Image 1: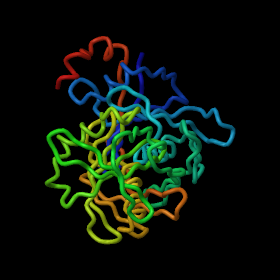
Image 2 (image 1 turned 45 degrees about the vertical axis):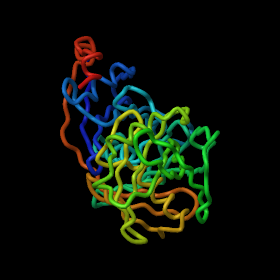
Image 3 (image 1 turned 30 degrees about the horizontal axis):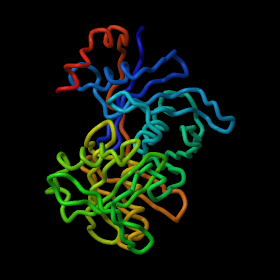
Image 4 (image 1 turned 90 degrees about the horizontal axis):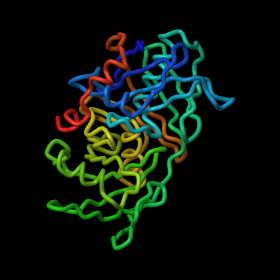
Length: 297
């Protein structure tokens, strides 16, 4: 079975985008893993699938699969690539677009310059929002937020803000993101048993009241060059802690994003780019893919 695909990125957060409207796409965890693998597949942080909507008010359905094959709730940079893809492929001329994700509807707007802004949907806060077990942990208030102290074996404990932008985030403030051991502490937070559905771990450095530097260790993908929902979660956490004011410029390792938040749904803006398009025999790729070996690379 031959699938047409497009490789895209938003601030270095890269995706394989599939048109499931004009071709038949039956995604499985194995197929998503094989496509996302950077050695044997196309290579991506996530796989994005555009489908006809189930919701009567949506223009399209938008699904996201992490590099580990698991389907997730939301991806902000992916959403920005999604609307650009829909317009470039001639699937719709509508602007703004409404897209259906598993938690509801989001609105996406592409400017003439190619910048895309996304209404990310409502944010929610606290342990219940991210399925976090607080038993035995200490907390303290900070402005409008509550910080939870999370022990990290072999490292200093992290004081985290809990924010859900459809998907769960644990955000901490660090003095210098470049010298923070994200590769070591990110996996400890992401897979901590207290998070029933795992979590995206954000590391935020405050530059001034409108600027942050950010790194994110993503659930099911590892550290990425940028994370749209992570940018929103960090910006909101900083505002709720009393450290930031909207709008906020978010510097990631892949580029700059903008986040504004009026207390309801955050808006995420930034550039997108198409890298290349191609075709792949998905059955041949999946059947020849060594999932055991790939997991060790």
